[in-house]
Image (cartoon, rainbow, N blue to C red; front, side):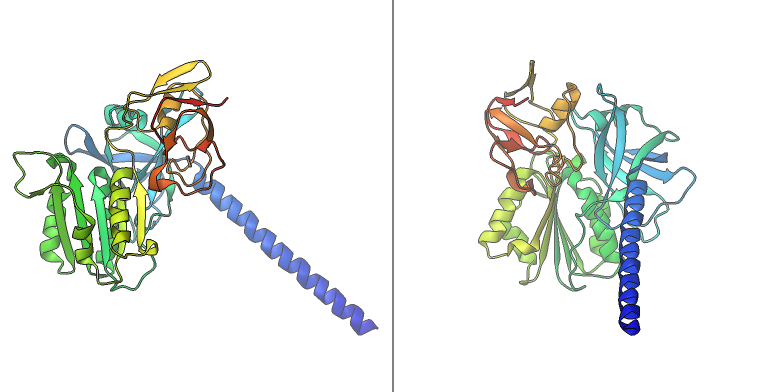
Amino acid sequence: MLSLLLALCGLALLAILFWLTDAGRRALRRRWDAWRQRPHLFRVTRRIDHDETHFSLHLTPVGGKCRPFIAGQYLTVLGPLLPAGNHAERRYSLDRWDASPGEYGLTIKKEPMGRVSGWLHETIREGDELQCRLPEGDFVLPEIGDNAPIVLIAAGVGITPLRSMIHALRARASGPVTLFFTARSLPGLIFHEEFETLAREWTSFRYHARLTGQDDMWEGNTGRFSAADLVTADNGRAHYLFCASHAMIEDLSQGLRDKGVPRSRIHYELFATSAGLCGNFTMTVGEAEIPVEGYPSLLAAMETHAIPAVSDCRAGHCGLCRRHLASGSVEHGPGLACSLRPGEFLPCIAVPTSDIRIAA
Ligand code: FES
């Protein structure tokens, strides 16, 4: 009887210890997440203006060291205060990678109606301080063998996370790696010389660049890449990583699937096109009637007009920004990565296809 009692006590003790350990782990996790999520102060140690709209910022933490990150991740930058009293926030991919980074690098395109990119471009200089959250993000290299081909496809400033991945792939001598890089004009092919040099020095790296617009200074190929171009780098095992606009990803990923590439080998990150939203449409919220053309997203238009909007990922993943459509229509494209109920839409990625009214 006594031994049974002791055994039961032992089991109860083990259960309590297990609960404590599990609870402790979760509490630690919460504290770590809270620490990561709080803004940290960074100093701009260098600013490089590539042309009138593209610029790079080098950042070092004030009173600390850069934490290692995974190639492809981003920093969240806190921009100017919004009318609602909170900071406008934008995620910018880290544009370089090092196992022990001495600084973080961002390369940004000033968007025509970009609240944060415009603010950074106009006001932030070397020596200034910026608030940023620590690196995070899931658009990273897939776990594959070192010799599986990697095909990277970037449009314009979408090159930034892919450049970071190229640095990481080179550091671990992976290969083969093929980069397809396109932009409307020559200034949009940021880091073009670096990739040309890399293609000469690193035998496992292939580089294809194209302009979709006219530029008298450009002597290379023009026109869009097709899925047929991309599969030339495939051997039945290649993984494709895109950082481009909705339209380009939709077109090329469908083309790849038509050629038999399984969905599991296609990965992507979306970014707003520099042209912003197209179409002479309005978004009505309560009494406010907002022409949305040119805004990077419906969410950005809402923020600019002090329409309360909650957001996190700004990329169709978290679902936090979801709203109800009272009338009109939108399209989400391939970035939609959370489930929506009928009538719901995500202002961070949805593109209006008519005038829309958002339910109160
Ligand atoms: S902010 Fe995350 S889905 Fe829109």
